[in-house]
Length: 456
Ligand code: BUP
Image (tube, rainbow, N blue to C red):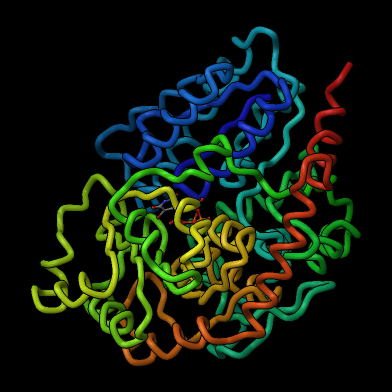
Protein backbone atom coordinates (compact mmCIF):
# COMPACT_ATOMS: atom_id res chain seq x y z
CA UNK A 1 0.00 0.00 0.00
CA UNK A 2 1.26 3.41 -0.89
CA UNK A 3 -0.05 6.28 1.22
CA UNK A 4 0.24 9.90 0.18
CA UNK A 5 -1.05 12.56 2.58
CA UNK A 6 -1.12 16.24 1.71
CA UNK A 7 -0.12 18.77 4.34
CA UNK A 8 -1.49 19.80 7.74
CA UNK A 9 -1.73 17.79 10.97
CA UNK A 10 -5.37 16.88 10.27
CA UNK A 11 -4.23 15.16 7.06
CA UNK A 12 -0.85 13.72 8.04
CA UNK A 13 -1.90 12.21 11.40
CA UNK A 14 -4.86 10.13 10.08
CA UNK A 15 -2.56 8.79 7.32
CA UNK A 16 -0.04 7.74 9.96
CA UNK A 17 -2.82 6.07 11.96
CA UNK A 18 -3.83 3.99 8.93
CA UNK A 19 -0.21 3.35 7.89
CA UNK A 20 0.45 2.00 11.41
CA UNK A 21 -2.69 -0.16 11.33
CA UNK A 22 -1.71 -1.61 7.92
CA UNK A 23 1.87 -2.26 9.03
CA UNK A 24 0.56 -4.09 12.11
CA UNK A 25 -1.40 -6.33 9.72
CA UNK A 26 1.96 -7.20 8.10
CA UNK A 27 1.13 -5.20 5.03
CA UNK A 28 4.10 -3.65 3.23
CA UNK A 29 3.63 0.12 3.46
CA UNK A 30 5.26 2.99 1.59
CA UNK A 31 4.64 6.50 2.88
CA UNK A 32 5.16 9.30 0.37
CA UNK A 33 6.14 12.53 2.10
CA UNK A 34 6.19 15.81 0.16
CA UNK A 35 9.29 17.96 0.64
CA UNK A 36 9.84 20.57 1.84
CA UNK A 37 7.19 20.01 4.53
CA UNK A 38 5.26 23.04 5.77
CA UNK A 39 5.45 22.69 9.54
CA UNK A 40 7.88 21.56 12.23
CA UNK A 41 5.08 19.56 13.87
CA UNK A 42 4.43 17.49 10.70
CA UNK A 43 8.10 16.79 10.33
CA UNK A 44 8.52 15.72 13.98
CA UNK A 45 5.44 13.47 13.93
CA UNK A 46 6.56 11.74 10.71
CA UNK A 47 10.05 11.18 12.09
CA UNK A 48 8.67 9.67 15.29
CA UNK A 49 6.32 7.44 13.30
CA UNK A 50 9.14 6.15 11.08
CA UNK A 51 11.28 5.39 14.12
CA UNK A 52 8.46 3.33 15.63
CA UNK A 53 7.68 1.57 12.34
CA UNK A 54 11.05 0.83 10.70
CA UNK A 55 9.26 -1.62 8.39
CA UNK A 56 7.48 1.33 6.70
CA UNK A 57 9.43 2.77 3.76
CA UNK A 58 9.47 6.53 3.33
CA UNK A 59 9.68 7.86 -0.23
CA UNK A 60 10.48 11.55 -0.38
CA UNK A 61 8.53 13.36 -3.04
CA UNK A 62 10.46 16.49 -4.00
CA UNK A 63 8.15 19.29 -4.96
CA UNK A 64 8.69 21.49 -7.99
CA UNK A 65 10.57 24.74 -7.54
CA UNK A 66 8.19 27.31 -8.90
CA UNK A 67 9.59 30.35 -10.69
CA UNK A 68 9.77 33.42 -8.40
CA UNK A 69 7.10 35.16 -10.50
CA UNK A 70 4.60 32.30 -10.01
CA UNK A 71 1.50 33.73 -8.42
CA UNK A 72 -0.43 31.27 -6.29
CA UNK A 73 -4.21 31.41 -6.00
CA UNK A 74 -3.88 30.92 -2.22
CA UNK A 75 -2.40 32.84 0.68
CA UNK A 76 -2.77 30.08 3.32
CA UNK A 77 0.58 28.18 3.39
CA UNK A 78 -1.18 24.80 3.71
CA UNK A 79 -3.39 25.49 0.69
CA UNK A 80 -0.32 26.62 -1.22
CA UNK A 81 1.35 23.35 -0.38
CA UNK A 82 -1.70 21.42 -1.67
CA UNK A 83 -1.48 23.42 -4.88
CA UNK A 84 2.25 22.76 -5.17
CA UNK A 85 1.82 19.01 -4.61
CA UNK A 86 -0.93 19.07 -7.21
CA UNK A 87 1.37 20.81 -9.73
CA UNK A 88 4.20 18.37 -8.98
CA UNK A 89 2.06 15.25 -9.27
CA UNK A 90 3.00 14.31 -12.84
CA UNK A 91 6.27 13.21 -11.15
CA UNK A 92 4.34 10.69 -9.04
CA UNK A 93 4.33 8.08 -11.85
CA UNK A 94 8.11 7.74 -11.55
CA UNK A 95 7.87 7.20 -7.79
CA UNK A 96 5.10 4.62 -8.14
CA UNK A 97 6.84 2.80 -10.99
CA UNK A 98 10.10 2.61 -9.04
CA UNK A 99 8.53 0.55 -6.23
CA UNK A 100 9.60 -3.04 -5.84
CA UNK A 101 7.53 -5.11 -5.29
CA UNK A 102 5.03 -3.05 -7.28
CA UNK A 103 2.24 -1.23 -5.45
CA UNK A 104 -1.19 -2.86 -5.09
CA UNK A 105 -2.99 0.43 -4.47
CA UNK A 106 -2.52 4.10 -3.74
CA UNK A 107 -4.34 5.69 -0.80
CA UNK A 108 -4.83 9.32 -1.83
CA UNK A 109 -5.65 12.41 0.15
CA UNK A 110 -8.97 14.11 -0.58
CA UNK A 111 -7.21 17.34 -1.60
CA UNK A 112 -5.22 15.53 -4.28
CA UNK A 113 -7.95 13.38 -5.81
CA UNK A 114 -8.23 14.94 -9.27
CA UNK A 115 -4.48 14.84 -9.84
CA UNK A 116 -3.68 11.39 -8.41
CA UNK A 117 -6.48 9.74 -10.40
CA UNK A 118 -4.94 10.71 -13.73
CA UNK A 119 -1.63 9.16 -12.61
CA UNK A 120 -3.15 5.91 -11.33
CA UNK A 121 -5.44 5.55 -14.35
CA UNK A 122 -2.43 5.66 -16.64
CA UNK A 123 -0.68 3.01 -14.50
CA UNK A 124 -3.82 0.93 -14.06
CA UNK A 125 -3.34 1.08 -10.30
CA UNK A 126 -6.31 0.97 -7.87
CA UNK A 127 -6.79 4.31 -6.12
CA UNK A 128 -8.61 4.66 -2.78
CA UNK A 129 -9.19 7.87 -0.87
CA UNK A 130 -8.21 7.98 2.76
CA UNK A 131 -10.75 10.52 3.87
CA UNK A 132 -9.66 12.56 6.87
CA UNK A 133 -12.79 14.46 7.87
CA UNK A 134 -16.42 13.65 8.68
CA UNK A 135 -18.92 11.73 6.53
CA UNK A 136 -21.12 14.82 6.91
CA UNK A 137 -18.42 16.87 5.17
CA UNK A 138 -18.09 14.14 2.55
CA UNK A 139 -21.83 14.36 1.84
CA UNK A 140 -21.52 18.12 1.37
CA UNK A 141 -18.40 17.71 -0.78
CA UNK A 142 -20.02 15.04 -2.95
CA UNK A 143 -23.17 17.09 -3.41
CA UNK A 144 -21.38 20.43 -3.81
CA UNK A 145 -21.76 20.69 -7.61
CA UNK A 146 -25.55 20.28 -7.18
CA UNK A 147 -25.61 22.97 -4.48
CA UNK A 148 -24.02 25.55 -6.71
CA UNK A 149 -27.29 27.35 -7.54
CA UNK A 150 -28.52 27.30 -3.96
CA UNK A 151 -25.22 28.79 -2.82
CA UNK A 152 -24.90 31.48 -5.45
CA UNK A 153 -28.55 32.57 -5.72
CA UNK A 154 -29.58 32.84 -2.14
CA UNK A 155 -29.64 36.04 -0.18
CA UNK A 156 -27.54 36.19 2.98
CA UNK A 157 -29.66 34.27 5.38
CA UNK A 158 -27.82 32.47 8.15
CA UNK A 159 -30.76 30.21 8.92
CA UNK A 160 -31.27 29.01 5.37
CA UNK A 161 -30.87 25.24 5.05
CA UNK A 162 -29.15 23.47 2.17
CA UNK A 163 -30.87 20.24 1.21
CA UNK A 164 -28.74 17.13 0.75
CA UNK A 165 -30.70 13.92 0.01
CA UNK A 166 -31.23 11.65 3.00
CA UNK A 167 -29.88 14.18 5.53
CA UNK A 168 -31.08 16.96 7.80
CA UNK A 169 -30.78 20.36 6.13
CA UNK A 170 -27.32 21.88 6.49
CA UNK A 171 -27.28 25.52 7.70
CA UNK A 172 -25.89 27.66 4.91
CA UNK A 173 -23.93 29.54 7.56
CA UNK A 174 -21.85 26.39 8.15
CA UNK A 175 -20.41 26.59 4.62
CA UNK A 176 -17.06 28.44 4.70
CA UNK A 177 -17.04 31.76 2.79
CA UNK A 178 -14.50 30.42 0.28
CA UNK A 179 -17.04 27.73 -0.72
CA UNK A 180 -20.08 30.00 -0.61
CA UNK A 181 -18.30 31.78 -3.45
CA UNK A 182 -18.57 28.96 -5.98
CA UNK A 183 -16.01 30.60 -8.29
CA UNK A 184 -13.19 30.89 -5.72
CA UNK A 185 -9.96 28.91 -6.37
CA UNK A 186 -10.76 26.64 -3.42
CA UNK A 187 -14.28 25.97 -4.75
CA UNK A 188 -12.80 25.12 -8.16
CA UNK A 189 -10.37 22.66 -6.57
CA UNK A 190 -13.13 21.07 -4.47
CA UNK A 191 -15.45 20.71 -7.46
CA UNK A 192 -12.71 19.07 -9.56
CA UNK A 193 -12.19 16.52 -6.76
CA UNK A 194 -15.91 16.00 -6.29
CA UNK A 195 -16.42 15.41 -10.01
CA UNK A 196 -14.11 12.40 -9.99
CA UNK A 197 -15.51 10.54 -6.95
CA UNK A 198 -16.84 7.68 -9.06
CA UNK A 199 -13.45 7.02 -10.64
CA UNK A 200 -12.10 5.86 -7.27
CA UNK A 201 -12.10 2.27 -6.03
CA UNK A 202 -13.33 3.16 -2.57
CA UNK A 203 -13.17 5.49 0.42
CA UNK A 204 -11.66 4.73 3.83
CA UNK A 205 -13.45 6.93 6.37
CA UNK A 206 -12.60 7.66 9.99
CA UNK A 207 -16.12 7.31 11.34
CA UNK A 208 -18.75 4.74 12.21
CA UNK A 209 -22.47 4.29 12.79
CA UNK A 210 -22.75 5.58 16.37
CA UNK A 211 -21.10 8.85 15.28
CA UNK A 212 -22.63 9.38 11.84
CA UNK A 213 -25.06 6.52 11.15
CA UNK A 214 -27.58 8.53 9.17
CA UNK A 215 -25.00 10.15 6.91
CA UNK A 216 -23.20 6.87 6.32
CA UNK A 217 -26.38 5.10 5.28
CA UNK A 218 -27.38 7.98 2.95
CA UNK A 219 -23.95 7.77 1.33
CA UNK A 220 -23.84 3.98 1.10
CA UNK A 221 -27.35 3.76 -0.33
CA UNK A 222 -26.34 6.00 -3.26
CA UNK A 223 -28.87 8.70 -2.31
CA UNK A 224 -26.19 11.38 -2.45
CA UNK A 225 -23.97 10.00 -5.24
CA UNK A 226 -25.60 7.50 -7.55
CA UNK A 227 -23.02 4.73 -8.03
CA UNK A 228 -21.01 5.68 -4.95
CA UNK A 229 -17.86 3.49 -4.68
CA UNK A 230 -17.56 1.27 -1.56
CA UNK A 231 -17.05 2.96 1.80
CA UNK A 232 -14.85 1.31 4.44
CA UNK A 233 -15.75 3.08 7.68
CA UNK A 234 -13.62 2.22 10.68
CA UNK A 235 -12.10 4.37 13.40
CA UNK A 236 -8.46 5.02 12.60
CA UNK A 237 -6.56 3.66 15.64
CA UNK A 238 -3.73 5.52 17.42
CA UNK A 239 -0.38 4.59 15.93
CA UNK A 240 1.64 4.79 19.11
CA UNK A 241 2.09 1.62 21.17
CA UNK A 242 -0.37 1.17 24.01
CA UNK A 243 2.32 1.49 26.70
CA UNK A 244 3.13 5.05 25.52
CA UNK A 245 -0.57 5.93 25.35
CA UNK A 246 -1.32 4.49 28.79
CA UNK A 247 1.79 5.62 30.63
CA UNK A 248 1.76 9.10 29.18
CA UNK A 249 4.88 11.18 28.70
CA UNK A 250 6.58 12.96 31.57
CA UNK A 251 6.00 16.62 30.86
CA UNK A 252 5.39 19.52 33.24
CA UNK A 253 1.76 19.78 32.20
CA UNK A 254 1.24 16.02 32.60
CA UNK A 255 2.30 16.33 36.24
CA UNK A 256 -0.11 19.24 36.64
CA UNK A 257 -2.96 17.20 35.10
CA UNK A 258 -2.17 14.31 37.48
CA UNK A 259 -2.85 16.64 40.43
CA UNK A 260 -6.32 17.80 39.27
CA UNK A 261 -9.60 16.14 40.36
CA UNK A 262 -11.15 13.66 37.89
CA UNK A 263 -13.09 15.18 34.97
CA UNK A 264 -12.48 18.72 36.24
CA UNK A 265 -10.14 20.20 33.62
CA UNK A 266 -11.26 22.10 30.52
CA UNK A 267 -8.95 21.35 27.60
CA UNK A 268 -8.86 24.08 24.94
CA UNK A 269 -7.36 23.83 21.46
CA UNK A 270 -8.27 25.57 18.24
CA UNK A 271 -6.07 23.28 16.16
CA UNK A 272 -2.63 23.71 14.75
CA UNK A 273 -3.25 26.38 12.15
CA UNK A 274 -5.74 28.95 13.38
CA UNK A 275 -4.22 31.62 15.54
CA UNK A 276 -6.96 33.61 17.20
CA UNK A 277 -6.89 37.38 16.77
CA UNK A 278 -5.23 39.21 19.65
CA UNK A 279 -8.60 40.52 20.89
CA UNK A 280 -10.20 37.07 20.78
CA UNK A 281 -7.22 35.53 22.58
CA UNK A 282 -7.71 38.02 25.41
CA UNK A 283 -11.40 37.16 25.65
CA UNK A 284 -10.67 33.40 25.72
CA UNK A 285 -8.28 34.07 28.61
CA UNK A 286 -10.97 36.04 30.46
CA UNK A 287 -13.55 33.33 29.73
CA UNK A 288 -11.28 30.62 31.11
CA UNK A 289 -10.62 32.58 34.27
CA UNK A 290 -14.33 33.28 34.77
CA UNK A 291 -15.51 29.68 34.22
CA UNK A 292 -13.97 28.59 37.56
CA UNK A 293 -12.65 25.28 36.23
CA UNK A 294 -8.96 24.45 35.95
CA UNK A 295 -7.93 24.54 32.30
CA UNK A 296 -5.24 23.52 29.87
CA UNK A 297 -5.02 25.68 26.76
CA UNK A 298 -2.89 24.82 23.75
CA UNK A 299 -2.59 28.26 22.22
CA UNK A 300 -1.14 28.88 18.77
CA UNK A 301 0.16 32.27 17.75
CA UNK A 302 0.70 31.76 14.01
CA UNK A 303 -0.59 29.76 11.04
CA UNK A 304 2.71 27.91 10.66
CA UNK A 305 4.45 26.84 13.88
CA UNK A 306 7.97 27.75 12.78
CA UNK A 307 6.94 31.40 12.43
CA UNK A 308 5.49 31.64 15.93
CA UNK A 309 7.64 34.22 17.72
CA UNK A 310 5.16 35.92 20.09
CA UNK A 311 4.92 34.90 23.74
CA UNK A 312 1.55 34.68 25.44
CA UNK A 313 2.68 37.32 27.97
CA UNK A 314 3.06 39.71 25.03
CA UNK A 315 -0.53 39.04 23.99
CA UNK A 316 -2.18 38.86 27.39
CA UNK A 317 -0.13 41.36 29.35
CA UNK A 318 1.63 40.42 32.61
CA UNK A 319 -1.37 40.67 34.89
CA UNK A 320 -3.69 38.39 32.93
CA UNK A 321 -0.82 35.99 32.16
CA UNK A 322 -0.12 35.65 35.91
CA UNK A 323 -3.80 34.97 36.68
CA UNK A 324 -3.79 32.33 33.94
CA UNK A 325 -0.77 30.63 35.49
CA UNK A 326 -2.54 30.43 38.85
CA UNK A 327 -5.61 28.71 37.45
CA UNK A 328 -4.35 26.55 34.63
CA UNK A 329 -1.70 25.67 32.11
CA UNK A 330 -1.05 27.36 28.79
CA UNK A 331 1.18 25.55 26.29
CA UNK A 332 2.39 27.11 23.06
CA UNK A 333 4.20 24.11 21.61
CA UNK A 334 2.92 20.99 19.91
CA UNK A 335 1.51 18.53 22.44
CA UNK A 336 0.47 14.91 21.98
CA UNK A 337 -3.24 15.61 22.10
CA UNK A 338 -4.28 12.04 22.86
CA UNK A 339 -2.21 12.18 26.08
CA UNK A 340 -4.41 15.09 27.19
CA UNK A 341 -7.80 13.92 25.96
CA UNK A 342 -7.20 10.48 27.45
CA UNK A 343 -6.19 11.87 30.86
CA UNK A 344 -8.70 11.14 33.64
CA UNK A 345 -8.73 14.73 34.89
CA UNK A 346 -9.96 16.16 31.55
CA UNK A 347 -13.71 16.73 31.72
CA UNK A 348 -14.45 18.85 28.63
CA UNK A 349 -12.87 19.98 25.39
CA UNK A 350 -13.30 23.37 23.73
CA UNK A 351 -12.47 22.38 20.17
CA UNK A 352 -12.14 23.94 16.73
CA UNK A 353 -14.07 20.87 15.49
CA UNK A 354 -11.27 19.30 13.48
CA UNK A 355 -12.68 15.86 12.74
CA UNK A 356 -9.76 13.90 14.21
CA UNK A 357 -10.13 15.90 17.40
CA UNK A 358 -13.86 15.12 17.57
CA UNK A 359 -13.25 11.39 17.05
CA UNK A 360 -10.42 11.38 19.59
CA UNK A 361 -12.58 13.10 22.25
CA UNK A 362 -15.53 10.80 21.49
CA UNK A 363 -13.27 7.78 22.00
CA UNK A 364 -12.58 8.95 25.56
CA UNK A 365 -16.11 10.13 26.34
CA UNK A 366 -15.03 13.78 26.71
CA UNK A 367 -17.93 16.19 26.00
CA UNK A 368 -17.14 19.05 23.65
CA UNK A 369 -17.95 22.69 23.11
CA UNK A 370 -17.47 23.32 19.39
CA UNK A 371 -15.93 26.60 18.29
CA UNK A 372 -15.21 26.08 14.58
CA UNK A 373 -12.67 28.34 12.91
CA UNK A 374 -12.00 27.52 9.26
CA UNK A 375 -12.79 25.23 6.34
CA UNK A 376 -14.80 22.09 7.09
CA UNK A 377 -14.97 22.76 10.83
CA UNK A 378 -18.52 24.15 11.04
CA UNK A 379 -19.82 21.19 9.03
CA UNK A 380 -17.97 18.69 11.23
CA UNK A 381 -19.32 20.67 14.18
CA UNK A 382 -22.83 20.01 12.88
CA UNK A 383 -21.99 16.26 12.80
CA UNK A 384 -20.72 16.46 16.40
CA UNK A 385 -23.87 18.23 17.59
CA UNK A 386 -26.17 15.86 15.66
CA UNK A 387 -24.50 12.91 17.36
CA UNK A 388 -25.00 14.62 20.73
CA UNK A 389 -21.39 14.36 21.96
CA UNK A 390 -20.89 18.11 21.89
CA UNK A 391 -22.66 21.44 21.75
CA UNK A 392 -22.18 24.33 19.36
CA UNK A 393 -22.34 27.19 21.80
CA UNK A 394 -22.68 30.45 19.97
CA UNK A 395 -22.21 32.47 16.84
CA UNK A 396 -18.45 32.25 16.54
CA UNK A 397 -16.53 34.13 13.83
CA UNK A 398 -14.52 32.59 11.01
CA UNK A 399 -10.70 32.51 11.15
CA UNK A 400 -10.23 33.46 14.78
CA UNK A 401 -11.73 36.92 14.28
CA UNK A 402 -12.99 38.65 17.39
CA UNK A 403 -16.69 38.21 18.08
CA UNK A 404 -17.21 36.49 21.43
CA UNK A 405 -16.78 38.14 24.81
CA UNK A 406 -15.08 36.33 27.70
CA UNK A 407 -18.25 36.29 29.78
CA UNK A 408 -20.14 34.39 27.07
CA UNK A 409 -17.25 31.96 26.60
CA UNK A 410 -17.20 31.25 30.35
CA UNK A 411 -20.95 30.62 30.27
CA UNK A 412 -20.71 28.13 27.38
CA UNK A 413 -17.83 26.32 29.09
CA UNK A 414 -19.85 25.93 32.28
CA UNK A 415 -22.75 24.58 30.23
CA UNK A 416 -20.46 21.97 28.64
CA UNK A 417 -18.99 20.95 32.00
CA UNK A 418 -22.33 20.81 33.84
CA UNK A 419 -24.73 19.41 31.22
CA UNK A 420 -25.39 15.86 32.48
CA UNK A 421 -27.29 14.80 29.37
CA UNK A 422 -24.30 15.72 27.23
CA UNK A 423 -21.91 13.87 29.56
CA UNK A 424 -24.00 10.68 29.54
CA UNK A 425 -24.36 10.78 25.74
CA UNK A 426 -20.58 11.17 25.44
CA UNK A 427 -20.12 8.17 27.78
CA UNK A 428 -22.61 6.13 25.74
CA UNK A 429 -20.80 6.85 22.46
CA UNK A 430 -17.47 5.98 24.11
CA UNK A 431 -18.88 2.59 25.11
CA UNK A 432 -20.04 1.98 21.54
CA UNK A 433 -16.59 2.95 20.31
CA UNK A 434 -14.89 0.63 22.81
CA UNK A 435 -16.93 -2.23 21.38
CA UNK A 436 -16.19 -1.54 17.73
CA UNK A 437 -12.46 -0.95 18.24
CA UNK A 438 -11.93 -4.04 20.43
CA UNK A 439 -9.70 -6.72 18.84
CA UNK A 440 -11.85 -8.72 16.41
CA UNK A 441 -14.53 -5.98 16.47
CA UNK A 442 -16.19 -4.19 13.54
CA UNK A 443 -13.22 -1.90 12.87
CA UNK A 444 -10.75 -4.79 12.69
CA UNK A 445 -13.08 -6.70 10.42
CA UNK A 446 -13.59 -3.73 8.07
CA UNK A 447 -9.85 -3.20 7.73
CA UNK A 448 -9.33 -6.91 7.05
CA UNK A 449 -12.16 -6.87 4.51
CA UNK A 450 -10.39 -3.99 2.75
CA UNK A 451 -7.05 -5.85 2.77
CA UNK A 452 -8.62 -9.09 1.53
CA UNK A 453 -9.23 -7.35 -1.79
CA UNK A 454 -5.50 -7.48 -2.42
CA UNK A 455 -4.77 -11.06 -1.35
CA UNK A 456 -3.94 -13.16 -4.37
BR1 BUP B 1 -2.91 21.53 17.70
C1 BUP B 1 -2.48 19.74 17.92
N1 BUP B 1 -1.19 18.10 19.00
O1 BUP B 1 -0.83 20.27 19.51
P1 BUP B 1 -7.97 17.73 13.33
C2 BUP B 1 -3.11 18.77 17.21
N2 BUP B 1 -2.77 17.46 17.40
O2 BUP B 1 -1.52 15.92 18.54
P2 BUP B 1 -7.78 19.99 11.52
C3 BUP B 1 -1.82 17.11 18.32
O3 BUP B 1 -3.50 16.90 15.24
P3 BUP B 1 -5.55 21.50 12.36
C4 BUP B 1 -1.46 19.42 18.85
O4 BUP B 1 -4.80 15.14 18.03
C5 BUP B 1 -5.39 15.57 15.69
O5 BUP B 1 -5.06 14.21 15.52
C6 BUP B 1 -4.80 16.09 17.00
O6 BUP B 1 -6.50 17.11 13.33
C7 BUP B 1 -3.40 16.42 16.58
O7 BUP B 1 -7.74 19.21 12.93
C8 BUP B 1 -4.67 16.39 14.63
O8 BUP B 1 -8.53 17.71 14.69
C9 BUP B 1 -5.48 17.57 14.14
O9 BUP B 1 -8.74 16.99 12.28
O10 BUP B 1 -6.94 21.24 11.75
O11 BUP B 1 -9.14 20.53 11.29
O12 BUP B 1 -7.25 19.18 10.44
O13 BUP B 1 -4.51 20.94 11.44
O14 BUP B 1 -5.58 22.97 12.45
O15 BUP B 1 -5.46 20.93 13.73
